Amino acid sequence: MKIMVARSAGFCFGVNRAVEMVNELLDQGKKVCTLGPIIHNPQTLEQLAARGVTIVESPDFVPADSTMVIRSHGVSQAVYDSLLEKKTEFANATCPFVTKIHNIVSKASAEGKTVLIAGDSHHPEVEGIRGHCSGNCYVFKNAAELQNMMDHFPINREESLCVVAQTTFSVSEWENCLEIIKRVYTNATIFDTICNATAKRQSEAEFLSRQCDAMIVIGGRESSNTAKLRDVCMKNCTTYLIETADELPLAALKESECIGITAGASTPASIIKEVLDTMSEINEGAGQNLMENNAEGN
Ligand code: F3S
Image 1 (spheres, rainbow, N blue to C red):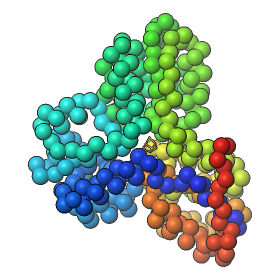
Image 2 (image 1 turned 30 degrees about the vertical axis):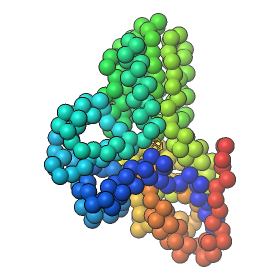
Image 3 (image 1 turned 180 degrees about the vertical axis):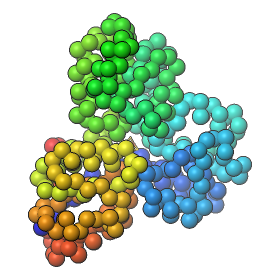
Image 4 (image 1 turned 45 degrees about the vertical axis):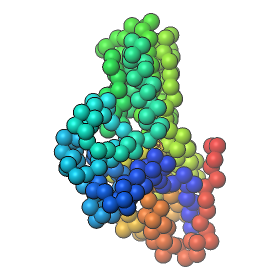
């Protein structure tokens, strides 16, 4: 059995930075709460909870003696305003790539442009981006929804548009959406804001899943980027989404000749290692067979 691991599997820069920020505050002896879970990984959340980190659902509920950490998804302008107004102590772990989108849409709104966001309207990152738009703003989750939206709420063809994407949006779906936008609107400024880490992760997942007969995607079931990876892989081979090594479908995997492994942006290296260790139990000599995916640029 051959096992190939995607080079991009695991923590991305933004998630790593956010988790480190929480740990640094704890090391300084601060009481820490996060606005929503800092990461879509139950095991890391448990470790942080053991260090006393609590989760609040609103900046209104931050305990007086705590520092609140804004996670990598970012927040709306209204949340910043509320934190400043209440003089709440906070640390900002918004990923710089998300902050860049906030700046783009805020400027575009100020210039009177209508903002189109490709993404999941219920995802906190998209809610945050939306919350930096002061004018018209529409969200669509795929090309079909965009087309439907344009049919029912026609936006003037000459209207000045600014188009951005959620950082974890599917690269192929983004291309489908742009095709529609470019066909209809002559005055659209398009910003490709899909994060490089996401694009690379998806491209490696695509590459691996085409070569393997089974793919294991490790990541939280609540994680948007993990779900996208599963969707990419499912098109090409049998795909299992697991959160921990305990969930590995060992019996089914024994039948596979080539297994690919990737992991979402919130998956710690320790969990990936556990999965690999468990795989080696069903595949004597997996250590020698273990290959790193060399899909860079694919
Ligand atoms: Fe940032 Fe990209 Fe990760 S936007 S949070 S580095 S997936």
